[in-house]
Image (cartoon, rainbow, N blue to C red; front, top):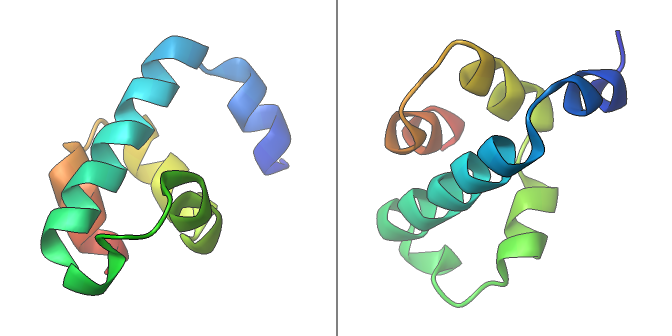
Length: 68
């Protein structure tokens, strides 16, 4: 199954809010990412890890620590 198909099946507003929370939490953990644009940061993160954490219901802060 492709990531695009998974993303289509998820609630868009909930997914967007969760990803924003991941970015905020990641910026708090990783000082070098504080001045980076959120879209750029999300492009650099491994999406398969993010989406699997989202589907399992992980807290965004825990997901950001997991990505680190």
